[in-house]
Each structure stands twice: as C-alpha cells, then as structure tokens.
Amino acid sequence: MELLRLALPRRVFTLSQVKYAIDRISWLYEHRALIGGLEFTEEPEILRFFYGRLKPVSDWQEKLVARFRQDFGDSL
Image 1 (cartoon, rainbow, N blue to C red):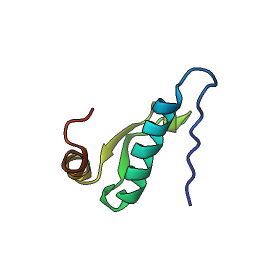
Image 2: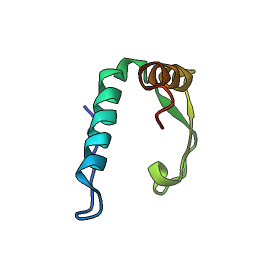
Image 3: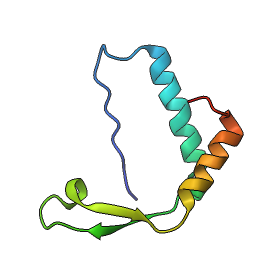
C-alpha cells in the first residue's frame, strides 16, 4: 500500500476550495483503474524522487483526461 499526505495550510483556503479539492480527489480515486504507472528515465543517487525524471508506461494520461472531460466538460 502506498500513502499520500495532503497538507493544507490553515487560513489560506476557503471551505469551498477545500470541498472542490475533495470532490476532484474522490473522483480520481473512483477512476484509479485508468491510472497507469511511471518509470524512471533518469535516477540520480541522491533524492531520486525529487530530481529524477519519469515517463508514462502507456497512454493512460489521455484516457484519464478524456474521462474527466466526459464527466465534467471543460470545468477547469
């Protein structure tokens, strides 16, 4: 299992902004099967997750964007 921490600074975001983020993150979780993986193309020895370069393993980004537009239109 991999975990992600989402930290929001206090008194910076309004409640509607936080609810919007929650809505989009839950949509992303519901469509997690569309998300493929990434693989390193460059892997430095120090802090590889910050300075490494990644490439997608398939065309999953296009599929995810198409599904997003199908559900939300051009709401961004």
